[in-house]
Length: 196
Length: 152
Image (tube, rainbow over all chains, first blue to last red; front, side, top):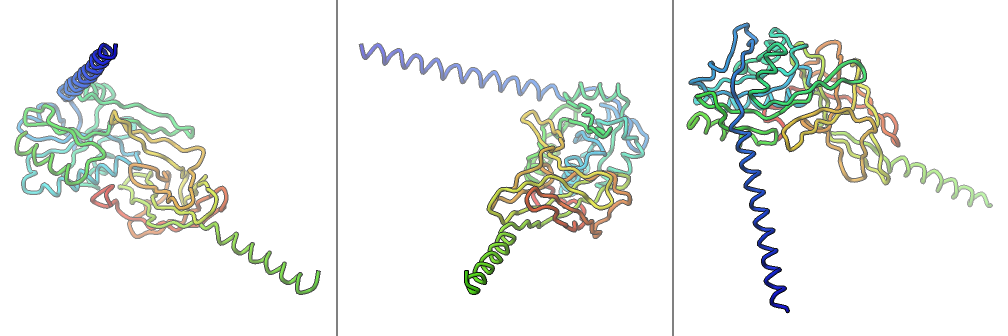
């Protein structure tokens, strides 16, 4: 019977569509859950020797990102970008604090971070923690980092590259990814200042 | 073979050789070394390498003047937002007509252990070694990283 085949076909088709929609919804919820969970307690030494904790984010708008000074390519590229966004926000960007957190506390001292970040901008604060303090912040920010040993005895670090925007309550507002254009980034920062 | 025939043959052989040499030319443009921040002894070199050639060539190694080490590297990022930097051991193919782009956030020449910190305006000599073309000498100008980052 042709008709029965048709009905079966339609039912099968509907089942596939429903499954896909269900899977997409599940994925969307999972992604949102992860985003909501970014942020939380941390305590780090700023490059000027003061201590910065989660409480310092309250009433401010913060930009938190991770890297290390022995990084030849992506970290300096990101720092130059962040510096240019902050410059573009001049005037309405006074509320924004930018934190560059090292994932390599073994090699990055506060002094080294001070010299490093001030090369890019006086608006960026370098943060250094002990191994435990970095672990705590990594847990709060869902940060992945791993030491990768090189053959010559040196090592490099893999790490999460996203730039997290935190609102006035110190909770996650948005993220800027590596591939964002200058205009997209500035638009997100503007929204952070206005709505965050 | 007559003298004229021998001359003609010699001419043909000579021309073939000249053409063969001329048909495999490596070019590099928009090349620069990023000025490293103070206290930092690692940086990267970038540029666009072209091969005016018939067969695919391969960039196998790089030697940068004054550096302890220079290697071909790739910065990669997955959908999970995690960036990683890895050495490229087998070299990078350059196909005829397809430029090889070394750029921030992608393929680059990692430079370690430059004795004196290079400053914008300096020039650093380097040798790029290709499988077919052999050693190609290049002088990289040093420049500060452009403010607009990767879009430049």
